[in-house]
Image (cartoon, rainbow over all chains, first blue to last red; front, side):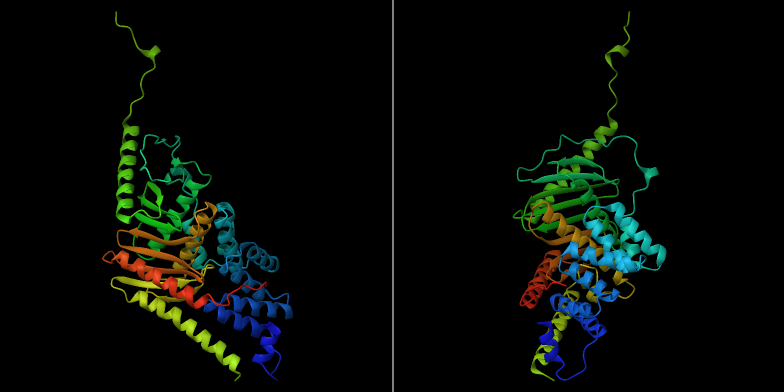
Amino acid sequence: MTAVLDRLLHPGGRRRSPTDFFGQADRLRREGRYAEAASLVASGLALDPSSVTGHLLAAYLHIAQRTIEPAKREFRWVLGRDPAHPRALLGLARIALEEGDLVGCRECLSSALRAYPDFPEARAVLDAIAAPDASAAPTAAPPRLERLRLPGAARALVVVDTQGRALVERPAVEGAGPRLARVARLAGAALHRAGFGPLRRAILDDREQTDFIRADSALTLALALPRTTPIPQGLLEVNRLWGAVQHELAVTRDEKPVPPPDSIRRVS
Amino acid sequence: MSRLKLALDLEGTSRGRQVRDIVEGLGRLHWVRGALVVSPDGFVIAAEVPPGLAVEPLAALAATLGRDLEVGASRLGHGAFQTALFSADDGTVLLAASRIGFVVALAEPQANLQSVRSALSEAVTLIEAAWAPGEAAPAI
């Protein structure tokens, strides 16, 4: 098909070089025309299978079309040729983040920034997912807030602290706490870049449910309700739970340990 | 110039123009400071942002966040991620998923968020309509 197109587009003209194909593919990519761009990249790579530009474009186009495994292979191919390639490292870092591999993500971004310190995209993502300050981490286990009453229609409630530790996870779903913490940090970084300040509230819609989120510098709370929930009602519910969490935390802080019976002195 | 080439060029021009129109339309809404369309790999397809705002880092974060929301929703079996709204004291970032990437709007605190959300949904509908035909991905 591509060959036919090529003949039609260049009747009697010179044979197109890989650079022509990749240049045209990049232009189409810039217009969001990913499938057509991918077709041209395939043609270019057929002529020059060892082109770093071609493999990098192929990786971008796989990501754009949400096909992650082939994208990973293409980025790795590029890094096999150029281990410090910043764009390939950023691409792999973002895939690692999607897969929940924060350590791998940070390693890729740090490598890219070591080679190219002036790489704003890598810096922005690394700043957003930087490891929490270990010295500021509380040594005690996080308080468990088990007494919170969820609305009848609630599908889930997750509360995390700044370290990403879950204070509440109902129901317990693997990775829900870290995911919420990650989303809050990325959103906070995007708001900061836009000049808006730290994250306070969020509403996330997918096809089936809406997550209502409240956040401050210490906590992030996400309440999942059915998608059909009116926004004002969802906001009311999340505000009520936010208040209840603050109350429970205050009670936990103020509770004095009850002395064990042996320590009670008899008064004679 | 062959008719086929002319048709492809016209289609490309109209799609490129369309995505720029979408971004400009969002940017013209009351109390909207800027808008952009970002591909899932973080590439800026079109942007209208105030001078002084570094668009590439914001686009990288928006695409990373959008992908995280997409992957999370799909992993938890909730169906596709559609829209998100993140508010701070001085403004709101709205983000919607589309076939070609993420549509982002930056709204001031005074903005009517329901109107901006609706405009974002309309933008996604326009993109879906313009990009749907013949976009089957060939193997690279």
